[in-house]
Image 1 (cartoon, rainbow over the protein chains, first blue to last red):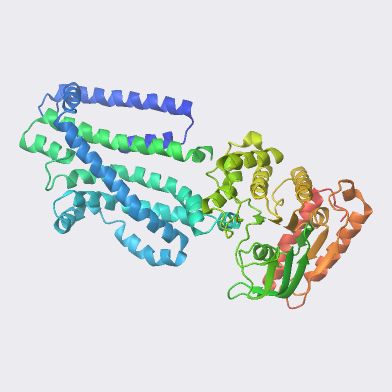
Image 2 (tube, rainbow over the protein chains, first blue to last red; image 1 turned 135 degrees about the horizontal axis):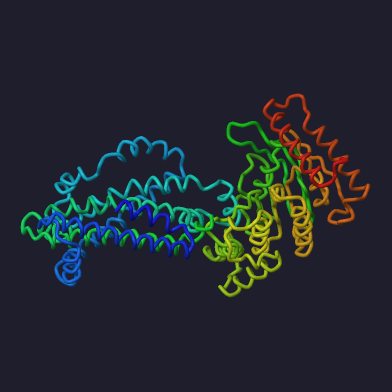
Length: 266
Length: 291
């Protein structure tokens, strides 16, 4: 996952022919990884490590069935978490970025709360918010919250006074400044924050789905592996979770290329 | 066009920049404002743009007392103030899009100036063409030269069809040929549209080349205004004439006087020393080393 993120980060800032080349390299890396998996599976010859051929066939045949539903449940939770985190953190980050005073007041709180591994709060959030969808969405949103908050704050604070003065002189009041300056300036920060946090977000989602649910890839993987001892299905679930993380990263990259075309020119 | 009477201004917890300051600028006049660093040149421009408010006295522009940016005035700053995420075309359209965003409310945009998307596009195209930047319309500011950025900023300002154009050291970051070309272009545009133009500069030759009237600011607080007339500005041949040289010399002497009051704080003196050497550099760069 970490490897994928690094490669795709480079991808968003390179021109098309080099991006094509990088995609080929990445496909090659995938083939090598699958090969290593295949060799390891043959060498170890244990039910705990089935060959990728079995797993991938199972993944494809299961996806239209139960696995697909679990995948959809997890996807919905992550997507809702991302939107929730942006909806709360981005306006807050913009406010902090515009006011030095507010930012100074908030800074110690952020530096205390930011490094806390949010995953340890899973039981607490479950106790407070109960067993439904909300606690799972909230816990994953907490991962993204600080990242979005800090990056949007810094992006807003980095907007030069001269730029604001110029745009104000064109007639912009607060609303137009928000629409024409602060919003486009914070968009790359939001996308970067989301991309940086997706790996952790999916990991924490897995943990959250171990509790109080019968739907979601976390539940599926755990059920197949520890209760039913159906290892090929467990691996199909792991593949699905990887595809989830990878797909979300690719979606963010695509959005960034579409919405932040100017960054490729710098 | 502009009437400043009895104006006093200071930034919070700082000494006064202007004290009981008076200035009248008539419609269609082209003014340069010159003075050492810290003399309040840029402050004066921000006051005229309605982005700063005086503590005493009043500023009227176009007959209206100024208490916020006025839709008919355009301001161009030294660093151009272009949006880095917007193309040249989008930057030129920005002022018009802000007007459309608010609608013709008379506060942010002139009342009755309702723009359809087509007429917005036509107007933007016109100014891209007029400033010679149509070929780079889809480029981003990071991809174009300083001169092209300045053209973009000018096109953006003029697309709003202002009657007053305020420019803060607009050409100081440009090389000499580009600067001379743009100085001439701005003059032409101002005359074509009978714009009132106020241009802040630290370069004596720019002040004399562009301005028909030159306002000299000294070490603050400024209260008495010194002005010099340069009746034939804008003429290319004029730069070589002895009349031009005489005005430059006169202006240089007045600037020396303006910067030398005995009670000037050490910070101001220092600031001016450094800016002065910069100013001299630009004069040499423009083959007016004899000054």
